Each structure stands twice: as C-alpha cells, then as structure tokens.
Image (cartoon, rainbow, N blue to C red; front, side, top):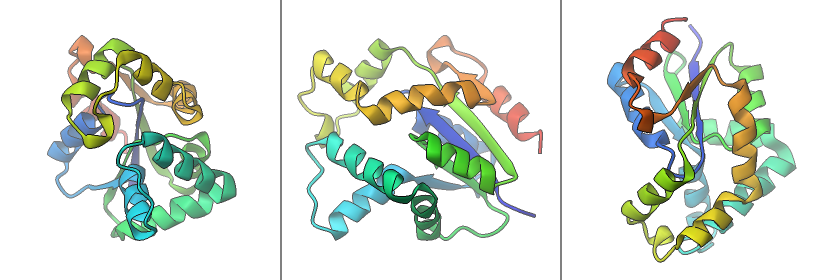
Length: 183
C-alpha cells in the first residue's frame, strides 16, 4: 500500500493545526509534515535568525521553491522519514508547485482548504502568543497576508476537494471522515 497524502491549505491562523489534530484523532499514526518546521530547523542549522520576522521564513521557502520545488519537497519528506503505509499530513501547503508535485507523485492525494475571514485569523494570531507574532497590529497583519506566498495560497482553493470554514461550526470530523473514506 502506498502513502495516503493529505494537504491542509490555508492562510496564516486559518486553523490548519486544529484540522491536523482532528485528522490525527481519526488516525493517530499519521505523520504531520510541516514545511514551516523544516524551514525553522534549516534556519537554526544555518544561523539565520527568523524569530522576529516571519518574512524571512517566507522568503527562504520561496527561494527553495524557485530553485527546485520537487527537490525541496523530496528533502522535506526525507527529513521526516515516513514509513510506506503511513498517512502523510502536510500542514501548510503554501505553493502551487508543491501542491501539484504532491498531486503528481502521490496517487492517494487529498486536499483540504481552510477558509477563515481575516478578522478571525487576526484574533487567533494575537492570541497564539508566539514571539514572532508579538506587537503586530491589524495593518501589519494585512501586509503579512499580502506577501506573495500568502497570495499564492488563495489560488489553491479552487483545486481542493474539501473546503472548510471552521468558524461556521461545520461537522468537521464528519467531513474529514467522508474525505478519507474515498480511499
């Protein structure tokens, strides 16, 4: 059996981690693969300070994509060392090149787009109390949201099998179960 791949796509603070947790409740053995965590480790290993500027992570990720998106994806997957039958849960797909590379390379590929309004996402951003997010006013959040990487995320919505708006209080567990039952 080949890996099942689930891509969770959404803008900053849309609820990607929350949806990932709900998927893990359905299958505790799934492996979460985070491009953000991979990039943070890359920065630490290369003495690049990103803690106070999210744009650094966005720009580094963008440079890897522009250089060779397929190789970047391969490096990230190898970093996590999944076993062949494991569900690979990609939390935070931000690039069309990565999205289509996953779709091309994994027969069992499903995608979920998290679509939350910007005001709800900003409230979550402030509440999560990460050092990188401190002292960001709404106008700054809008600028972060307008980075080329964040804009690219919005374009992926049209390709996703499932679109969730968590603040609308849908039965998320049921929708995810229905998506996974198609395998």
